[in-house]
Image 1: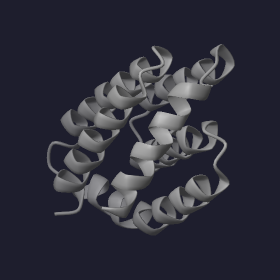
Image 2 (image 1 turned 45 degrees about the horizontal axis):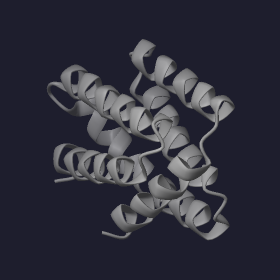
Image 3 (image 1 turned 90 degrees about the horizontal axis):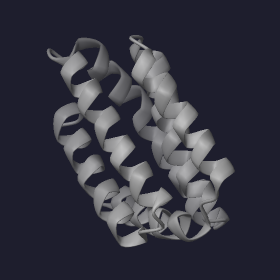
Length: 130
């Protein structure tokens, strides 16, 4: 629940502060996530994507706590990704969800970005950390 609250707040703030350079950086991360087949690389990029969103809003506390939470769950998520049947299908779904979050940020729609972040986090946790 803490992660959901933080990332919702981060998404709203990011939508208000997102510029073309930031969108391009997030797009580059998404491109790498789509291209990689390696679970560890995907995990690093996934973490970087969420931390980058938290950093866009310029709230250091939200960013720092997001980093701490992501670091705490990174290993269990990676372990699950490596053994999960259907990992490729889930990876594609996560990529689609990341793209939808970015589209909301690009549009400056903080509420939509927050809703999409929450749905993404909850779905990922159901699949990877039941």
